[in-house]
Image (cartoon, rainbow, N blue to C red; front, side, top):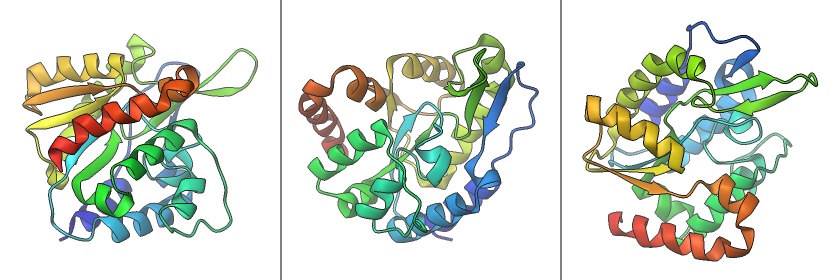
Length: 229
């Protein structure tokens, strides 16, 4: 069984049964959106149809306009079609983190080279949304609420173990975001998922607050990741 097939099975079996805090919902693109499943299948078939091990890059959890729509971590419909060449059925979306990630991937040699070496996903592969007082649903991180984290901690631990079993190196894990890295480091002390965890600035933070310095942050990524190519 190829990495791609293991990944497709993993996506199809993502389910969260834990009771969540009030006004918090689960974002599962594979259970709610047939287009996300077909796009993700095509993506993994294209770039992961082998048994080569990859280095893990783990974000927080999927958002509404990236993986929450496409099923492919840090990849909006715009990048999925224009860069990856995956048909999106006419769907279109733009997500800031995806913009940074694909600029970085271009600097690393492009998608064909990058995905041979790296696997991108999230510590929590299902996302969360919260209903705000204005009646709008917003992205919510697994660590934004202690009650939410307590509810999903077992799912996170199981998901990390399952992702490692897909075919990931465990000597080093690249983790996106300071707070995300702190949470993973605590879990890692107990469960010993990875020998080393290397923090990288989160793409959303870069694009939202440090856009003028984006090329410098790309250089940081390239310097750290290129050692594993």
